[in-house]
Image (cartoon, helix red, strand yellow):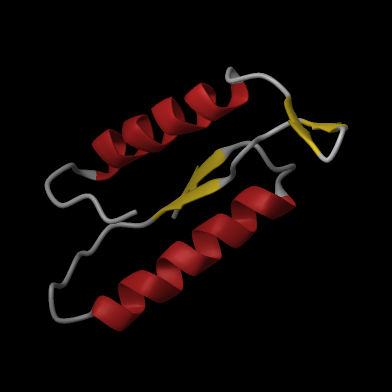
Length: 77
């Protein structure tokens, strides 16, 4: 998700709200099997507007860190 406007704290707040909404949505049934939905989110902020590739690298690192940290979490880099 790209969210123009919020600073890093605001972006983490948005990501955390989404994570909680998914977690609180309850188990889903797919092909007769119950599946618990969770998400991991990585938050990165663009410091230098000319470095879009750097932003994507930072976001990728943040989501990998969230998954390594135990999943179902928000991580900011």
